[in-house]
Image (cartoon, rainbow, N blue to C red):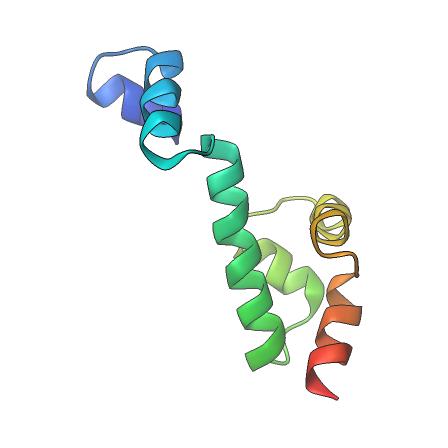
Length: 87
């Protein structure tokens, strides 16, 4: 987590966030979401795992939050994404 990074280097979370955005051009939460989204898409395309299990696998506690965020970013639900790309 960003707080453990900050603790390791004895700096504030705000400073770590600033440095991260300065280097990558995106904030930490967007970066983490993009990693999760990429992995979720990969799992949807290459496995028969349920959306619930994929949600947990990419770090979401709430499957409904994962589904909502996935649809917000892609325009389709995880199930629709799987069906469109595998048919």
